[in-house]
Image (cartoon, rainbow, N blue to C red; front, side):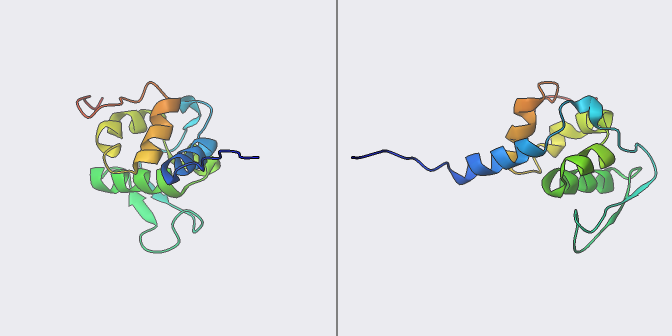
Length: 119
């Protein structure tokens, strides 16, 4: 008796893990659009924890960290739909391929190519 079992690739396993954390819609992303955001230790356990949303590099760093390390409730609490969409053309180049693909597969409103312009 022979069975062929192909284990999923590391890429596929990561993409699935990220997909499980995604909100049902981008409308759920009700995070702040101004001020300073202090991330909890379960999202960022070392290094910088405070991010100013008025500073583009700081905001991009915050979004990159929350996308990669946050759970569903963190995504909803710390990310804002409009800011995510506006930053996505650059942000998508700063995150891992499995993470990027999970978001772009679930949310067609996120531009899937680098040629898209920020809103």
